[in-house]
Length: 170
Image 1: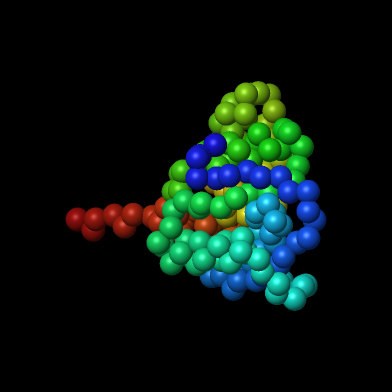
Image 2: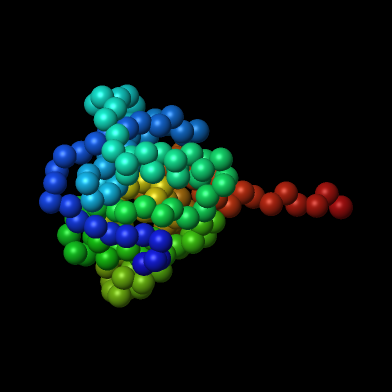
C-alpha cells in the first residue's frame, strides 16, 4: 500500500457526515475519529452536515482531485471489512492515477489467481469510492465491468484520469 494512506481502525462509531456536489453526482463523506469511513454517490442528503476534521480534509482533497490538481490522496482511512477485503482494497490503493488493472491482475496481486470472483466481490463492497480506486479495475478484454456507483461514473472517472489523446490529422 502506498505510504500516503494511513489505515486506522476506530472504536468510535460516531459518524460525521458532509456532502459535496461533484461533476458526476452528489458525494456523501462519512468519517469517524479514526478517519474516512465511507465515500459514496447518493441521490440526496440523508443526514445533516456535521463534519469533523477528516470530513473537511477529504472535501478539500476531492475538490483538488476534480480540479485536476491532485492525483494521490493523503487521508487516514477507517476501513470496515474482512481481512480479505482489506487486502484487496490495499491492492487497489497501489493502482496509480491514470492506470488500470484487470480483475485477473488484481487477483494475482492479492496472491490468488483463482480468486477473481472473490476479488470482484470485495471490489464491489468497497465503501470508499474514488479514493480506494476500484473504478481502475476492468475486464481482461478492456471492458468496463462492475461498478456499484454505475458504469457511467466509472467511464467518466477513467476518462478524467486518463483522457484520450487526440490523434494527428495528417
